[in-house]
Length: 109
Image (cartoon, rainbow, N blue to C red; front, side, top):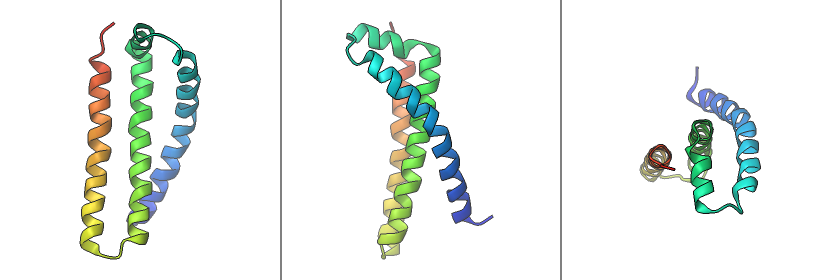
């Protein structure tokens, strides 16, 4: 299978998964937006919230990085700059969700 085909399939797969996760996130965000810090920490301390939010972050950053990498491929002509930009993007897309998930699982009530 071609690399572009794999990217396209993963973009479609991740966007389909992001729809219910985004709905879950928006609904819960509206319910905790006016809460105090303790209640927000309590919400994110629940194991179901941790798992769903972790999935949301991972799929969001994966979708984001693949989408932006396509922009790099279309608009950056210099191969060297394109490769550096793509590698930095993928590094960012790995480190940010990882840091978020580590902090999420280290929350205490």
